[in-house]
Image (cartoon, rainbow over all chains, first blue to last red; front, side):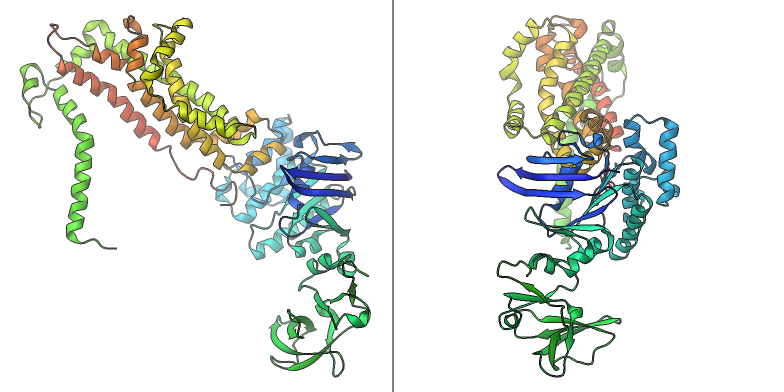
Length: 332
Length: 279
């Protein structure tokens, strides 16, 4: 229910500038993911929006109202922490009820809201347990439940899945996606360093690096039209193949990038090379081809590959699927 | 690693030495307290006679002044612990979690204060106590003991509180908790082990303190604590030191401490924060 506008925000810790000037509009009800390598300032951005850190300069406004000086609890936000941050001495029920009790809700109201949230997250059988009696996934659900109970206008997630194992991560990711669909007027901001989480959850992704926004757009926009080398390399798995020198020259660019699914084996012409390894995933095969660059090119084929290791092959990019970059890394 | 029989033997010899060294004085006090009359002056290391006469005399002769001393000690020690823990907890929250200029210097100063020998500040403290009108009252002792236990309490609690996960506090802030709520509702329940440890040490220090107790309540028999009471026990003549009574009194005074430690050591459980944050 709240659109957030971030205007020219900077944040310094002492002499270290972490956020160097960020402008961003987050629409009401949108699922926005902040993604970037560690140290890029994405968590700091989230904490600035939450109010856990003070903004050095610039403004953050919820629905047009500047919240710079507002305490976190007065901003209508709820936050899910990476480390769960459950109160260890309180039961699941008490954990979820703590915030709204402080907010002065009546006992019936507290009871009702906790029950609804617990029902939503299948936590009802565990309401009387302590956090230490729960598994990692259940703990994270309690943390999410605690946030839901607050009935926030803005939902903040700080790498909520990074402490879970791979299988649980996929399951919890689905929970969060479902949550977003069922609370579709709640703005959600989600921080992750995992581009798969970003791609699967986001309405829009904001890629950060070194305290600056590199690009904002829908997952497919970022995938298909990256602004620069950094975004091109960060979004997509496996990483985009980058080639320069004699490979880029025919395209009139300093360097070019081709995604693994946009390369194909050709009988003649193309770029000659040698297969050095093949990853057989069943549905796909990723072949690593040494083209004489520092890193091998990765090419995806559906099903199994005709080419074994050490095979002499020739690669060519599909038509119109080549990304061209200038000397400064910008897309052409 | 397996020790040779010789070193195994030496290990237990060493353990025995430590045990004897630490327990023997108390053991000797106990067997002496059960002796009476001239038996007291026969040196023997095994119980030779058994009589509760010393205990009866200490507790019930002398118009119950020893019981009054006991009560004073309990009163003073309890208040000292209560004040030290209350101030210590709030101070340590500030020192552990609030960023302000000079925090490190302040912590070092607090630690330095606790290193002054008691007797060095006795004169100054006497003046303070006198000018506050606390002389010859229990509050003079509570006041001065708190001064000496507080640095240690603050130091230990600060270290402990610093180790509590910052996310817990942030989650509470997002939930709308004030610093007071955070300290009392979130941190205190997690700090029981530290509170018990520091509280116990503060209690023992206050319970056993002699110098201040003697100085600040010297002329008021009604406000004496147990250590002073014991020191001022007198025999039938001025030349007789009533060893039997002194030993009986010492045993009576030590027993509550032993019970306190035994009760609370069960409460000192590690891993109280388990499960709240990733571990």
